[in-house]
Image (tube, one colour):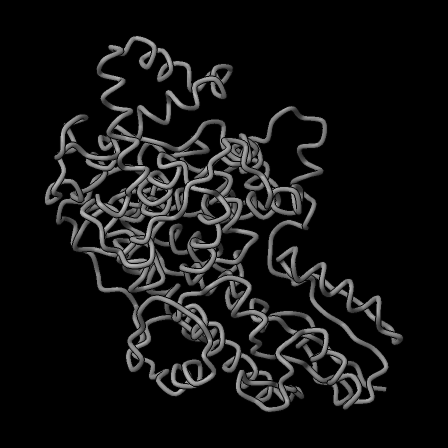
Length: 510
């Protein structure tokens, strides 16, 4: 009476109750499939990271005495499609039941429901035991309310899970220290080197090339720098607490040409693949803070906790509340094509050259690079959110649809019309200059709006406001900017719009 249990590539949770004891009648099924490499074009480091992490996870299960049926990407017996794979293994094992952990992607959730409906044996789905919230907890929390507000959700989560609370009050006397998290880094304090790795993945890269798996981006085949096991992930977490947490909050929004990671944790891949749970990350960080309160300010810790307990859980909740319609939303009616420099990093705009270049080199950029540099340009240039979504989903090592699409289509591109954000996150060059040194060595002047050396962000910004003014006329948070637009000299606005159109029509020339 055998049971086959499916484990997906982002379900690498060794702490799951499935693994609390061994059972010779249970077979764990894992597979590297071309189905999962081709639904969008992925960065080579993303494909490699997931496959290596999956192999390490399978090996750990086997070391603990579990039986694993593992299919590598080049195994001849690998059918490369989930439905065929499951039926093949069920038949081989003569299984009488099939179980799976609930996927976090709507695409796979739908596919597994369809597969189980076709099976004639007993089937069962269980929770991944990863998130603080259930799939529909956010939906239920906001039922009957006119607007989704992350801050109210975040406060509920802090109270419910007793995180950074002191006698039913928020630690430090405030719920949110966001205003303390916006410092510009100018060389001090010194940034410790990231907890890096030097893994040799050349054999896997060669296999992917031989199979003609289509990817993009760069990879150092003998110096792969990402955590791909639970031990690796715990090492990165420890390094963050001991070396980076002390300044994380201050500089979490900072931009700098010489620093890719600043004080960021680089834990997102470990968490989104479920090698680490959000609870153990938060517990570790909070415990470290209480042990070192004389050294670490509450603003450093709260900023980090808000991203995980607040924003991460919030985005997942919105995903399950709004899918599948969410994936089709394009409320601002944007349809322009993605510029070629998104795939090459070759542009004269220094901020985009660094943010996109880093993304292509490392499959990584921090949230302000993603939101206020690449995302900002994408929205101002009125790019098609489908193309923007696919690029973000493919390029970043931590990108899984439940977290990518809500951040990209929602917060970054405002294609959802305000479900996630109350206003679009757009800015002129002033914000980018304020947060870092990208503008200092740029060919364009961040202070100029018109002329050949004027920063493209400036004309694009005013053009966007003018193009979309009818859509935003009832939005209170846009009232000040629309009022400034209305007061703008007509000739100046015409010049701004003319330059913006040149940029939009030929973005790779800029």
